[in-house]
Length: 193
Image (cartoon, rainbow, N blue to C red; front, side):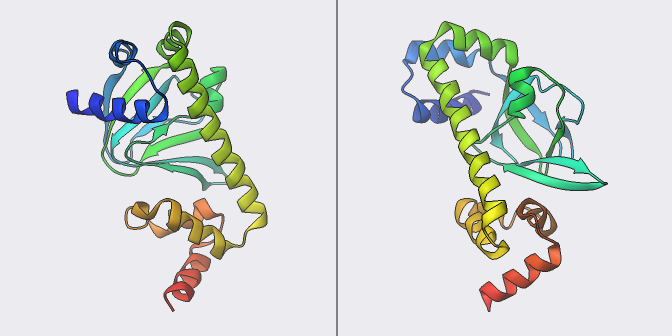
């Protein structure tokens, strides 16, 4: 547990300068949570009650529509994973968050995170940084799905998340890119060509 908290502390202090006294007391709010491969952290229709920090492992966030998964996000080591809309509004989620590997996390509840934000300007600032990053990534992804061709989206994915290429099945990467597995296969052949 100590090592997991140290890993989280490094990421938090990298994002925002937080006084040592505040970070030490804040870490008490985080609880260890382990998940087996294929386990859901969140299911459609549930309220997202926790924000997770991934110490090790891998998750996917997806929407189920017409019997097909539409993958929105992958999260791995040192990433935060949450359905931000459901979490912030405490309303039912349209998404699933599922592990792709055995995953070790630290989680904080909505209520405890709210207490942190209200007790510390540094953590309020941290919350803004995390929400801003999430919003910017969502906007970039939305624009890319409309403007960029599939090859460009795949090359961006390789550049931004190179460690995931070997860890995520190709059909899931295709879903994330909004293309068929066959199209992704053609693009990969063209690139390695």
